[in-house]
Length: 173
Image (cartoon, rainbow, N blue to C red):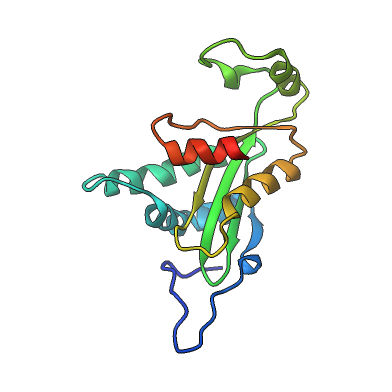
């Protein structure tokens, strides 16, 4: 299983853009995630807003984060694809013992503690969407599918407060 590393715009006169619903979601197992790690890192780099000189560092960090997540119990990865990878999202169920919340700033709401103890919280570790995808709702679709596949009542994601577009997107969902 391989995918093109670069997204190609449609060619030729009269080429119509691919409809958004043509981006299909597909679940990958751990072995597939490991096999496609470099392709997913390329997608990450094409989708990131890395500052000049920081590209290599970001390119190196993504596969390391993915490898760490793959080892977690309940790991799940979805890809969105049309002719190439359009996006991906991955994560894992938050452990019922609440250890995932250590370091949380503030008081954890009682409802979140209850959902955690019942196994209904899923950590969405990373969502990556290629900036040139025609599916403007792909990130939301990836997140919703991850949560639905795990029967999660709550999705949790760490978002850099300085990343206003990401913060606004998550708040809108």
